[in-house]
Length: 389
Image (tube, rainbow, N blue to C red; front, side, top):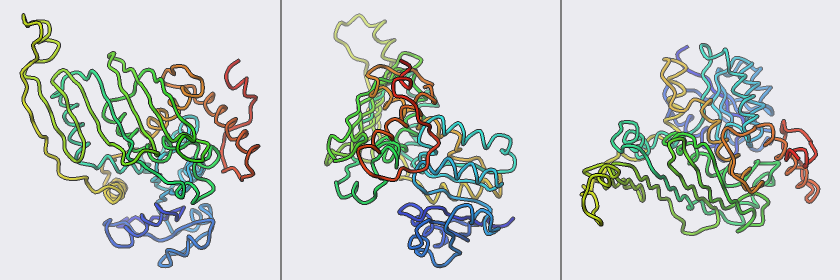
């Protein structure tokens, strides 16, 4: 195979953007040969290639070697499983699924196919050179042991018009959540990519605080990690102008990433060592003020598409293996679960319990509002039983 023939299912905002990048020749050795969308008008946005109504028709056509899934969230699981079983290489948009149980189903469909098929996720923020540099600082040991992480990511401002632009938006049935499932999967993926997974999460979510929606548009979460360090994650779609500030406190000092600048206030002596050894009561370790250079924000979506293509044709290692997508989904699920139950949640969560609770949210929503729920694998269950009571 000299080129990869790819099809896109879901030609909405992101699907169309991916199509334009591929058609413009920005990804070498990747050829767009088909698209599929239930809305013929969406498929017609890409007249250069064969259009299909359903993913199944496109997968059976022989037109494609790989599939890019850019549909509403719940369909990521069902279409992804079908595509893997059809022998296609698969690249799925974020989140890879709505909840942990569906992530497990999707990942299980890939087991045993690793040598023949490539399965990746569109975590394009992993190509950002700033986050790559921060990860290098952590992994190299330059920062020493991390003691606290604080990420305020509230510059995801969205208007009422945004949420009114599609009936599936900001609903339990359509998206499976709000800011955590739509805007923040990239940040949650980066969070675990940089720092690993916590052992417990306690979160307070506000549902429809700033908008007329049923899902979360503000989240404040506190996490505890295996070494006893803590993390705080704050996000919202209702604050303007908002903030994007990542602060890391470690033995070797403090790193702050904000406004395209990484500043490292580096302790000459590890803070715990200095505290134990100094005779002075109000002393602080001497520091160096360092600016860490980074070469821009990387290739983003195009770089992930190129990496996916190179993995298929050359065996290149993936920047974002789809199996790692379960971690960001679990963080989002745990934050919602903690807020719903008003108690700390231990990781890994009980995926089936969360699935039952989510289904109850969908059922309750359907009773209040006449809407057509998106296809989902969750099952009906009595709410008391879903809480384990």
